[in-house]
Image 1 (tube, rainbow, N blue to C red):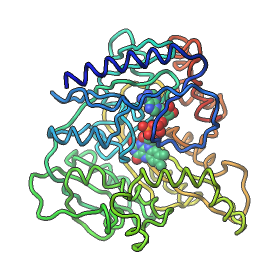
Image 2 (image 1 turned 90 degrees about the vertical axis):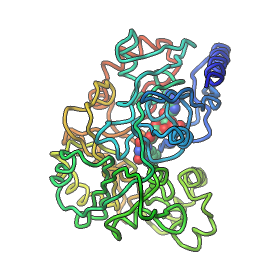
Image 3 (image 1 turned 45 degrees about the vertical axis):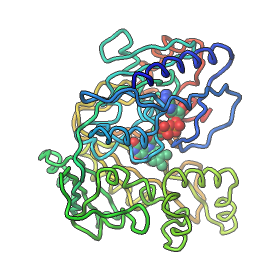
Image 4 (image 1 turned 180 degrees about the vertical axis):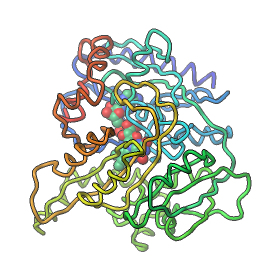
Length: 439
Ligand SMILES: Cc1cc2nc3c(=O)[nH]c(=O)nc-3n(C[C@H](O)[C@H](O)[C@H](O)COP(=O)(O)OP(=O)(O)OC[C@H]3O[C@@H](n4cnc5c(N)ncnc54)[C@H](O)[C@@H]3O)c2cc1C
C-alpha cells in the first residue's frame, strides 16, 4: 500500500494542475451517480477524478481510501482484512466521498450513526487548487463538521479515513413483525443486535430485521438471482447470509425498485442474468428513461399524472407513529424502508440532528393520480410534515424549500462562513442553487 500512497500523491499533483489550468465553475467527471434529481447540463469544467479509487491503508480500526472509491471495492478489500466500514450504504456504486458529501446510512447506524459520524479525517480539494486536511480538532475542523451534506459545493473529498468494525463470516437475521415503534425502541435500548433495519409493507404489516454476526451458519440463502430478498422478510422468521451477501442484500433489487424495470418477473430476470441484476444497471435504465421520456409519454397517453417521490427522511423516534399515519394517508407508496440512527450525532453544521434516536424512512417510487396537482405537490407535503415533526430530509433528490426555509434547516449561517473561507471565488455552486434550483 506504500505504492498506493505514492500514486495518490502523484494523482493529487496532476489534479491540482488540471484545476489550475482552466477557468469557470467546476463539476466532477464520474462514471456512476446515485443522485436523483435531473440537472441542467451547464457549462462547467469537468474534473476527472475517476482514478481516485484506491484503498490506501487498512489497520487499527480504520480504513483510509481515495474519495471516489465505490463501496463495492472498498468493502471487498476491508472484508479481505476481516473488517468492514462501520456504515456501508446499500448501493454498490455509492462512493466514499459521495457518502460523506451527502448522507449515508445503513443498518449499523443505530450504533455508529451516519457515514459521516464514522469519519476520522478528510482531505478536501478546494476550488483554488489547495488541498486541506480536516480533522475534528485541527484548524480545518469547521470544514470537517461542515462537509457532510455539502454535496460538492465546498470542495471534493480526495481522501477519507473512516472507522471500521471487525466482522464474522455470517449474519443471522431475524424478521420480527411489529405494530408500534415502541417495540423498535426496545430493541434499540437492548443494544444486542449488530444490525437493525425494517420494512413496512403497509401499516398493518411491518417487520424489524435484527442481524447478528455469527461464526457459523446452518445454511445460507442467496438473493442475488432467483430469490428476492425483500419478499423473504415476510416469509421467513430466521435466515442466514454470508457477511458479503448481507451487506449487499438490498442492491440486487434496488430494495424493491427493480420492479420498475420488470426485473422481478422470473422470465425477464433470467434474461437480465445474475451479473446485470443490481443498482448499477437499473440506474442506467432510469436515466435513459428520464432522457427519452418513455414513461412520461405512456402516462400522457393514459391520462395519468405522476410525481416522483424519492426521499429519505429522518424523524425523531417519538414522532415516527405520527409520520407513518401521515404517510399512509397522503402518500401510501409501499414498501418503505426504516432504519434507526443512534450514535452521538456529531455537531455537523449542514445536517443538524438533536440528541436521541431518529428513524430514517426511505421511499422511492412514483405517485400516480388521475387528478392533476401542482408540481411537487406530494414532495412538498412531505417536506412540511418532516419540518413540523422536527425531522430532516436528505438532499439527493427533488427539494422544494424556499431559500429562507432551506437556510434555517440546513445550517445557512455556518454555510455562508464556510463558503466565504473555503470557496470565496465561487468555483462550486451554492448548496441551495444545486439542490433546490438544480443549477
Ligand atoms: C434511490 C436512492 C436511494 C438511496 N439510498 C440510500 C441508502 O439507502 N443509503 C445511503 O446511505 N444512501 C442512499 N442514497 C443516497 C446516497 O448515499 C447519496 O446520494 C450519495 O451522495 C451518493 O454518492 P455517490 O458517490 O453516488 O455520488 P454522486 O451521486 O456521484 O454525487 C452526489 C453528490 O455528491 C457530490 N460528490 C460526489 N463525490 C464527492 C466527493 N468525493 N467530494 C465531494 N462531493 C462529492 C457530487 O457533486 C453530487 O452533488 C440513495 C440515493 C438514491 C438516489
